[in-house]
Image 1 (spheres, rainbow, N blue to C red):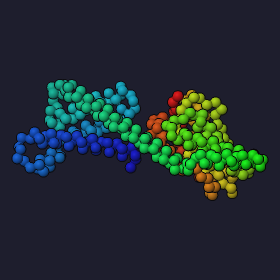
Image 2: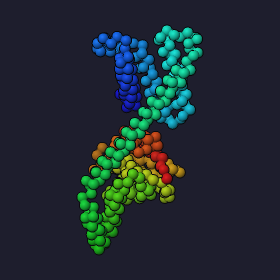
Image 3: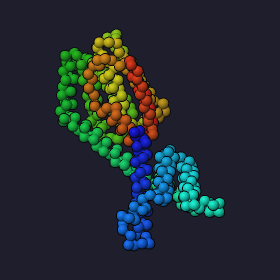
Length: 335
Protein backbone atom coordinates (compact mmCIF):
# COMPACT_ATOMS: atom_id res chain seq x y z
CA UNK A 1 0.00 0.00 0.00
CA UNK A 2 1.19 3.49 -0.87
CA UNK A 3 2.71 5.26 2.17
CA UNK A 4 0.53 8.37 1.69
CA UNK A 5 -2.64 6.29 1.42
CA UNK A 6 -1.66 4.33 4.50
CA UNK A 7 -1.01 7.53 6.46
CA UNK A 8 -4.37 8.94 5.31
CA UNK A 9 -6.30 5.80 6.33
CA UNK A 10 -4.55 5.61 9.70
CA UNK A 11 -5.39 9.23 10.50
CA UNK A 12 -9.02 8.80 9.42
CA UNK A 13 -9.61 5.56 11.33
CA UNK A 14 -7.99 6.88 14.53
CA UNK A 15 -10.09 10.04 14.33
CA UNK A 16 -13.24 8.01 13.68
CA UNK A 17 -12.49 5.66 16.55
CA UNK A 18 -11.95 8.50 19.02
CA UNK A 19 -15.09 10.35 17.92
CA UNK A 20 -17.28 7.24 18.11
CA UNK A 21 -15.88 6.39 21.54
CA UNK A 22 -16.72 9.85 22.88
CA UNK A 23 -20.21 9.85 21.33
CA UNK A 24 -21.07 6.35 22.49
CA UNK A 25 -20.00 6.93 26.08
CA UNK A 26 -21.70 10.33 26.21
CA UNK A 27 -24.96 8.83 24.97
CA UNK A 28 -24.54 5.86 27.30
CA UNK A 29 -24.26 8.10 30.34
CA UNK A 30 -27.43 9.92 29.29
CA UNK A 31 -29.46 6.92 28.09
CA UNK A 32 -33.15 6.68 29.00
CA UNK A 33 -33.14 3.01 29.96
CA UNK A 34 -30.61 2.78 32.79
CA UNK A 35 -31.23 -0.96 33.18
CA UNK A 36 -30.12 -1.86 29.65
CA UNK A 37 -26.91 -3.97 29.71
CA UNK A 38 -23.82 -2.28 28.39
CA UNK A 39 -23.20 -4.96 25.75
CA UNK A 40 -26.73 -4.55 24.36
CA UNK A 41 -26.43 -0.79 24.27
CA UNK A 42 -23.14 -0.71 22.34
CA UNK A 43 -24.25 -3.48 19.94
CA UNK A 44 -27.39 -1.47 19.15
CA UNK A 45 -25.41 1.72 18.49
CA UNK A 46 -22.47 0.34 16.53
CA UNK A 47 -24.36 0.45 13.22
CA UNK A 48 -26.80 3.29 12.77
CA UNK A 49 -27.16 6.57 10.94
CA UNK A 50 -25.01 8.49 13.45
CA UNK A 51 -22.07 6.15 12.81
CA UNK A 52 -22.38 6.78 9.07
CA UNK A 53 -22.43 10.55 9.68
CA UNK A 54 -19.38 10.28 11.97
CA UNK A 55 -17.50 8.28 9.32
CA UNK A 56 -18.29 10.88 6.66
CA UNK A 57 -17.37 13.78 8.94
CA UNK A 58 -14.00 12.32 9.91
CA UNK A 59 -13.27 11.38 6.29
CA UNK A 60 -13.91 14.93 5.09
CA UNK A 61 -11.93 16.34 8.01
CA UNK A 62 -8.97 14.16 7.06
CA UNK A 63 -9.23 15.21 3.40
CA UNK A 64 -9.26 18.89 4.39
CA UNK A 65 -6.25 18.40 6.64
CA UNK A 66 -4.14 16.29 4.31
CA UNK A 67 -4.85 18.04 1.00
CA UNK A 68 -5.77 21.62 1.95
CA UNK A 69 -4.35 22.51 5.37
CA UNK A 70 -0.89 21.11 4.60
CA UNK A 71 -0.70 23.24 1.46
CA UNK A 72 -0.61 26.33 3.72
CA UNK A 73 -3.34 28.06 1.71
CA UNK A 74 -5.77 29.47 4.28
CA UNK A 75 -8.41 30.52 1.74
CA UNK A 76 -8.77 27.09 0.16
CA UNK A 77 -8.64 25.36 3.54
CA UNK A 78 -11.46 27.50 5.00
CA UNK A 79 -13.45 27.06 1.79
CA UNK A 80 -12.95 23.30 2.04
CA UNK A 81 -14.10 23.33 5.68
CA UNK A 82 -17.29 25.23 4.78
CA UNK A 83 -18.10 23.05 1.77
CA UNK A 84 -17.47 19.89 3.76
CA UNK A 85 -19.63 21.17 6.61
CA UNK A 86 -22.48 22.07 4.23
CA UNK A 87 -22.32 18.61 2.70
CA UNK A 88 -22.32 16.99 6.14
CA UNK A 89 -25.34 18.92 7.38
CA UNK A 90 -27.33 18.13 4.23
CA UNK A 91 -26.34 14.46 4.48
CA UNK A 92 -27.39 14.42 8.14
CA UNK A 93 -30.78 15.93 7.35
CA UNK A 94 -31.27 13.51 4.49
CA UNK A 95 -30.49 10.52 6.67
CA UNK A 96 -32.84 11.89 9.30
CA UNK A 97 -35.58 12.43 6.70
CA UNK A 98 -35.52 16.18 7.32
CA UNK A 99 -34.45 17.34 3.92
CA UNK A 100 -37.44 19.62 3.30
CA UNK A 101 -36.50 23.11 1.96
CA UNK A 102 -37.50 24.97 5.13
CA UNK A 103 -35.18 22.97 7.34
CA UNK A 104 -32.37 23.03 4.76
CA UNK A 105 -32.40 26.85 4.66
CA UNK A 106 -31.99 27.10 8.44
CA UNK A 107 -28.71 25.23 8.70
CA UNK A 108 -26.24 28.11 8.97
CA UNK A 109 -25.40 27.46 12.62
CA UNK A 110 -24.77 23.69 12.15
CA UNK A 111 -22.65 24.40 9.08
CA UNK A 112 -20.52 26.93 10.97
CA UNK A 113 -20.21 24.58 13.95
CA UNK A 114 -19.19 21.64 11.73
CA UNK A 115 -16.71 23.78 9.78
CA UNK A 116 -15.26 24.97 13.11
CA UNK A 117 -14.89 21.35 14.21
CA UNK A 118 -12.95 20.48 11.04
CA UNK A 119 -10.81 23.61 11.44
CA UNK A 120 -9.95 22.89 15.09
CA UNK A 121 -9.24 19.24 14.24
CA UNK A 122 -6.68 20.35 11.65
CA UNK A 123 -4.98 22.66 14.17
CA UNK A 124 -4.80 19.97 16.85
CA UNK A 125 -3.67 17.33 14.35
CA UNK A 126 -0.96 19.64 13.02
CA UNK A 127 0.24 20.41 16.56
CA UNK A 128 0.77 16.74 17.35
CA UNK A 129 2.34 16.26 13.90
CA UNK A 130 4.80 19.11 14.57
CA UNK A 131 5.66 17.61 17.98
CA UNK A 132 6.23 14.21 16.37
CA UNK A 133 8.47 15.71 13.67
CA UNK A 134 10.47 17.60 16.30
CA UNK A 135 10.94 14.41 18.29
CA UNK A 136 12.00 12.47 15.17
CA UNK A 137 14.55 15.18 14.31
CA UNK A 138 15.98 15.07 17.83
CA UNK A 139 16.20 11.26 17.73
CA UNK A 140 17.76 11.33 14.27
CA UNK A 141 20.30 13.91 15.40
CA UNK A 142 21.08 11.88 18.52
CA UNK A 143 21.65 8.73 16.44
CA UNK A 144 23.80 10.71 14.02
CA UNK A 145 25.91 12.05 16.87
CA UNK A 146 26.18 8.59 18.48
CA UNK A 147 27.38 7.06 15.22
CA UNK A 148 29.96 9.83 14.92
CA UNK A 149 31.13 9.33 18.49
CA UNK A 150 31.53 5.61 17.92
CA UNK A 151 33.67 6.32 14.87
CA UNK A 152 35.91 8.93 16.47
CA UNK A 153 38.14 6.61 18.56
CA UNK A 154 39.98 9.43 20.28
CA UNK A 155 40.13 11.99 17.44
CA UNK A 156 43.09 13.82 18.97
CA UNK A 157 45.17 10.66 18.70
CA UNK A 158 44.10 10.17 15.09
CA UNK A 159 44.88 13.79 14.20
CA UNK A 160 48.32 13.47 15.75
CA UNK A 161 48.95 10.32 13.71
CA UNK A 162 47.82 12.05 10.51
CA UNK A 163 50.07 15.05 11.23
CA UNK A 164 52.99 12.70 11.79
CA UNK A 165 52.28 10.85 8.51
CA UNK A 166 51.88 14.17 6.70
CA UNK A 167 55.28 15.36 7.95
CA UNK A 168 56.86 12.03 7.06
CA UNK A 169 55.45 12.16 3.54
CA UNK A 170 56.82 15.66 3.02
CA UNK A 171 60.29 14.63 4.26
CA UNK A 172 60.23 11.65 1.91
CA UNK A 173 59.10 13.97 -0.91
CA UNK A 174 55.86 12.02 -1.41
CA UNK A 175 53.79 15.05 -2.34
CA UNK A 176 50.74 13.16 -3.52
CA UNK A 177 50.63 11.11 -0.32
CA UNK A 178 51.02 14.24 1.80
CA UNK A 179 48.18 15.92 -0.09
CA UNK A 180 45.93 12.90 0.45
CA UNK A 181 46.67 12.87 4.17
CA UNK A 182 45.90 16.57 4.37
CA UNK A 183 42.59 16.08 2.56
CA UNK A 184 41.65 13.24 4.90
CA UNK A 185 42.57 15.32 7.95
CA UNK A 186 40.30 18.17 6.81
CA UNK A 187 37.44 15.73 6.20
CA UNK A 188 37.78 14.21 9.65
CA UNK A 189 37.90 17.63 11.28
CA UNK A 190 34.68 18.61 9.50
CA UNK A 191 32.78 15.43 10.34
CA UNK A 192 33.76 15.59 14.01
CA UNK A 193 32.94 19.26 14.49
CA UNK A 194 30.03 19.60 12.06
CA UNK A 195 28.09 16.50 13.08
CA UNK A 196 27.07 18.10 16.39
CA UNK A 197 25.42 21.05 14.61
CA UNK A 198 22.00 21.17 13.00
CA UNK A 199 23.33 23.33 10.16
CA UNK A 200 26.73 24.43 8.90
CA UNK A 201 27.81 27.08 6.37
CA UNK A 202 27.23 25.86 2.82
CA UNK A 203 30.83 26.80 1.97
CA UNK A 204 32.05 24.26 4.56
CA UNK A 205 29.90 21.53 3.03
CA UNK A 206 31.17 22.32 -0.48
CA UNK A 207 34.77 22.29 0.79
CA UNK A 208 34.15 18.89 2.40
CA UNK A 209 32.76 17.55 -0.88
CA UNK A 210 35.79 18.91 -2.73
CA UNK A 211 38.13 17.07 -0.32
CA UNK A 212 36.06 13.91 -0.69
CA UNK A 213 36.15 14.06 -4.49
CA UNK A 214 39.91 14.66 -4.54
CA UNK A 215 40.48 11.57 -2.44
CA UNK A 216 38.18 9.48 -4.63
CA UNK A 217 39.97 10.64 -7.77
CA UNK A 218 43.39 10.12 -6.19
CA UNK A 219 42.67 6.46 -5.53
CA UNK A 220 41.59 5.78 -9.11
CA UNK A 221 44.18 4.78 -11.72
CA UNK A 222 44.83 7.05 -14.70
CA UNK A 223 42.96 5.13 -17.39
CA UNK A 224 41.20 6.38 -20.51
CA UNK A 225 38.31 4.03 -19.77
CA UNK A 226 37.52 5.87 -16.50
CA UNK A 227 35.89 9.27 -17.02
CA UNK A 228 35.32 11.54 -14.02
CA UNK A 229 33.79 14.97 -14.53
CA UNK A 230 33.42 17.26 -11.50
CA UNK A 231 31.88 20.75 -11.50
CA UNK A 232 31.65 22.65 -8.20
CA UNK A 233 30.47 26.25 -7.67
CA UNK A 234 33.21 28.88 -7.58
CA UNK A 235 31.13 31.36 -5.59
CA UNK A 236 29.15 30.06 -2.63
CA UNK A 237 26.58 32.35 -0.95
CA UNK A 238 26.26 32.66 2.82
CA UNK A 239 23.65 29.93 3.27
CA UNK A 240 23.23 27.19 5.87
CA UNK A 241 22.78 23.48 5.22
CA UNK A 242 22.46 20.32 7.29
CA UNK A 243 25.87 18.59 7.30
CA UNK A 244 26.58 15.56 5.13
CA UNK A 245 23.27 15.42 3.20
CA UNK A 246 24.91 15.50 -0.24
CA UNK A 247 27.75 13.03 0.18
CA UNK A 248 25.65 9.81 0.08
CA UNK A 249 24.47 10.62 -3.48
CA UNK A 250 28.06 11.28 -4.58
CA UNK A 251 29.33 8.23 -2.72
CA UNK A 252 26.70 6.10 -4.46
CA UNK A 253 27.88 7.27 -7.89
CA UNK A 254 31.48 6.25 -7.21
CA UNK A 255 30.52 3.02 -5.47
CA UNK A 256 28.45 1.63 -8.34
CA UNK A 257 29.81 3.54 -11.34
CA UNK A 258 33.54 2.74 -11.35
CA UNK A 259 35.08 -0.41 -12.76
CA UNK A 260 38.64 -1.47 -13.49
CA UNK A 261 37.58 -3.81 -16.30
CA UNK A 262 35.16 -1.84 -18.48
CA UNK A 263 34.55 1.74 -19.66
CA UNK A 264 32.78 3.78 -17.00
CA UNK A 265 32.04 7.33 -15.91
CA UNK A 266 31.00 9.48 -12.96
CA UNK A 267 29.63 13.02 -13.31
CA UNK A 268 28.99 15.36 -10.38
CA UNK A 269 27.69 18.88 -10.95
CA UNK A 270 26.69 21.23 -8.11
CA UNK A 271 25.40 24.76 -8.56
CA UNK A 272 23.58 27.36 -6.46
CA UNK A 273 20.75 29.44 -7.90
CA UNK A 274 19.89 32.19 -5.40
CA UNK A 275 18.93 30.08 -2.34
CA UNK A 276 18.41 26.81 -4.21
CA UNK A 277 21.13 24.18 -4.32
CA UNK A 278 21.13 21.98 -7.41
CA UNK A 279 23.07 18.76 -7.80
CA UNK A 280 23.19 16.30 -10.68
CA UNK A 281 24.97 12.99 -10.15
CA UNK A 282 25.34 10.43 -12.90
CA UNK A 283 27.26 7.21 -13.26
CA UNK A 284 27.56 4.18 -15.45
CA UNK A 285 26.18 0.88 -14.19
CA UNK A 286 29.02 -1.60 -14.24
CA UNK A 287 29.03 -5.35 -13.81
CA UNK A 288 31.84 -5.41 -11.25
CA UNK A 289 32.04 -2.11 -9.33
CA UNK A 290 35.09 -1.43 -7.24
CA UNK A 291 34.71 -1.47 -3.48
CA UNK A 292 34.49 2.08 -2.13
CA UNK A 293 33.65 2.46 1.52
CA UNK A 294 31.88 5.53 2.87
CA UNK A 295 29.86 6.88 5.75
CA UNK A 296 27.22 4.13 5.38
CA UNK A 297 24.31 6.52 5.79
CA UNK A 298 22.67 5.19 2.65
CA UNK A 299 20.32 6.91 0.25
CA UNK A 300 17.23 5.68 2.11
CA UNK A 301 18.36 7.13 5.44
CA UNK A 302 19.40 10.37 3.76
CA UNK A 303 15.95 10.79 2.18
CA UNK A 304 14.34 10.23 5.57
CA UNK A 305 16.65 12.79 7.13
CA UNK A 306 15.77 15.30 4.40
CA UNK A 307 12.05 14.73 4.96
CA UNK A 308 12.54 15.59 8.64
CA UNK A 309 14.82 18.58 8.19
CA UNK A 310 13.45 20.05 4.93
CA UNK A 311 9.77 19.08 4.55
CA UNK A 312 8.45 20.41 1.25
CA UNK A 313 11.77 22.12 0.47
CA UNK A 314 13.61 19.42 -1.47
CA UNK A 315 13.10 17.34 -4.60
CA UNK A 316 14.95 14.17 -5.57
CA UNK A 317 14.52 12.40 -8.89
CA UNK A 318 16.32 9.15 -9.63
CA UNK A 319 16.27 7.56 -13.08
CA UNK A 320 18.09 4.56 -14.46
CA UNK A 321 18.55 2.50 -17.59
CA UNK A 322 20.42 -0.69 -18.24
CA UNK A 323 23.72 1.22 -18.47
CA UNK A 324 23.35 4.51 -16.54
CA UNK A 325 21.99 5.91 -13.29
CA UNK A 326 21.17 9.57 -12.70
CA UNK A 327 20.09 11.59 -9.67
CA UNK A 328 18.87 15.19 -9.73
CA UNK A 329 18.55 16.95 -6.40
CA UNK A 330 17.19 20.35 -5.45
CA UNK A 331 17.19 21.84 -1.95
CA UNK A 332 15.83 25.16 -0.76
CA UNK A 333 18.23 26.62 1.81
CA UNK A 334 18.01 29.38 4.41
CA UNK A 335 20.38 32.25 5.13
